[in-house]
Image (cartoon, rainbow, N blue to C red; front, side):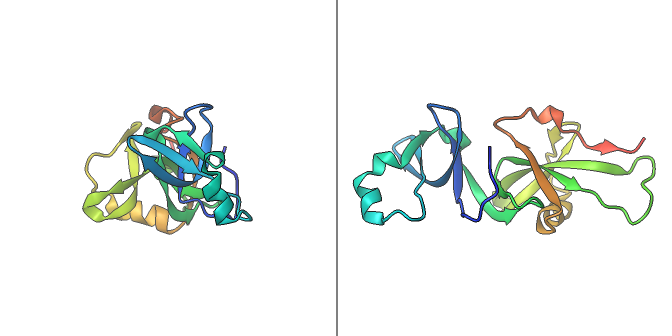
Amino acid sequence: MRKKTNDFYNCRGKSTETGEWLFGSVFFVGNRGYILTVPSNQRAKKVIENLGDYATEVDTKTVAWCIGINDTNGMPVFEGDIIRENVVYDREPEIGDVLECYYVIKWVEKYNSYLAIPFEDGKLFKNLHLFLDSLYAIRQNSFYVVGNVHDNDLNEYKCKCKE
């Protein structure tokens, strides 16, 4: 489980041995990925001499980069995270108004940016006509992480409207 911290993690991945999420720096040797977790008070020379003590093999499919922002709870956000936008109305919500909206954080090469891709009926939008809405959701930090694509079924996250 991710914890609130002042440390900066540039990557995460799931340990191939324990299935536990690890946070740190990633490196690859051939087709195998490793997360390097080094305590901030550790000297570089000791780490290099004992690299095996600090590097843990991870499932390369789960390696994800931190996008450099935190959610409203102060938690770092990674690609593959599922976020829920806090929808705030300046009036009483009406029937059909979206009350909960879910997105997946993805790198989109076409826009050279991390985007929050919205869901529709538990599926990601195929076309990015909601590009500006996506940018607004992650730029305003008006969201929180509710899961990720590796640990959760995307069908659990459907936008909810007032009926």
